[in-house]
Length: 152
Image (tube, rainbow, N blue to C red):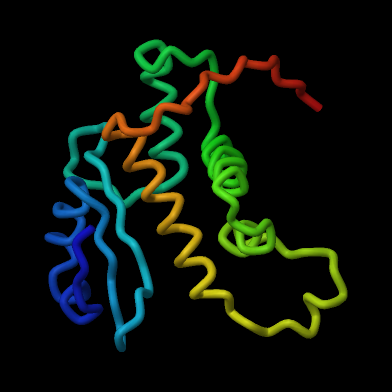
């Protein structure tokens, strides 16, 4: 991932969006990561759009047949990430913090720790796992059966 300073991102935002099509860009301010920029080409041929759940959902939905999956929603990424992070022995509390879940625990009221270091470690481990799958090094990937979705 490419890393740039916040002032550089502000001064050349269009170029940042173009660069983010090739790889995610981390924006840093005062020696801390403050944002990650993802972008993809506009489906209407009008340049580049910042990442959004709708854009991602539309891109995947238009290619379901190519990916060999019957249906898909952006929320599936959260579920998969959470399941895999716990499989990677990341503590469930840290996974919940990555997903920005509020716990129903009374300690949550008093615990004001931001968990940034723990979230960073969890996301780095998750990223390394994904990179190993992409590189063909992960041999334990097993296709899961597709269950019918229930509608409420």
